Image 1 (cartoon, rainbow, N blue to C red):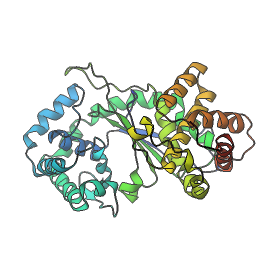
Image 2 (cartoon, rainbow, N blue to C red):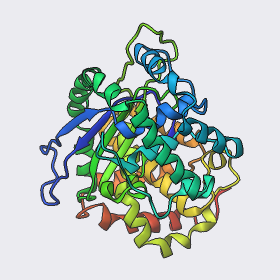
Image 3 (spheres, rainbow, N blue to C red):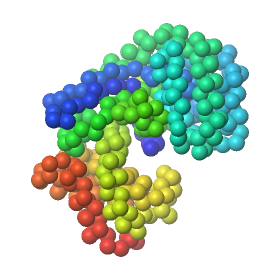
Image 4 (cartoon, rainbow, N blue to C red):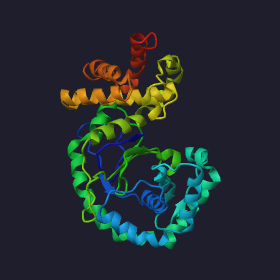
Length: 362
């Protein structure tokens, strides 16, 4: 999911919480850094002219100076060839999660991947192999190690801010069950376009228990003399929204038949659905559900003004069920505390939607 938000951080890894000890006192361990695989693929895509121009900074200037001599590398040329036939998306560097064991890179080749459908499996795999060669030829690991102290300096403040906010603990306390996930929040200093989740389990089973967020440096008025600046901003939305996708994934599957009977509620002709490439009711409900959960958490932890602004944003975006879902969750689940966990409460939301909307709303 892509959100153009002004949020932001770097890679963070949060240890799994035992299922019987999810509490506000459980503070996950956080390690922050820049993901080498994502950074490698971002650099190649930038060198190929197929990535939105990064905001100016000391770091982006340094990257360009170091890697421009490799602008005609086979990996760059392969990417240009792919781009001649299909538009290359800014989140394509998520392929970096198929790489592990830097600097002695191991490549995992997924059996199935949505990028295969868009660009062709043989093309994607060939590109990954060439990207590994790019890393070796350009001595990417040397560049990465040279900048590790810079990455660490970015991480320090954000780590403290994230822990002070307690955003992950609040999300865990909401669901009251273990999603079986580790958290990996990635800073992407060349990313000027938006924060988004990465479905790591689709890219590499070694990271199937990882919830990954990618976020960038969004100061459009920056200069070549400034360091990238990463602030929390509206990070609560990012963590609660994208994290909720992971928590409710199994519930959407478990209740898929019941959900399908509500498919008459799909507002596929609305601009917001088209802009977000939402073509199915399952996808539509998934997005309305997580946005509703965020609204409920806003009711619990933020000001009424912030709640109203968030609701207004969802209405403008044509997520027309998010407000009702959020208010229902807050009143019937958060305030009443009559359910063991969100799993036990989830069917009540489907019943509510059927009762609230016996026919498709105008």
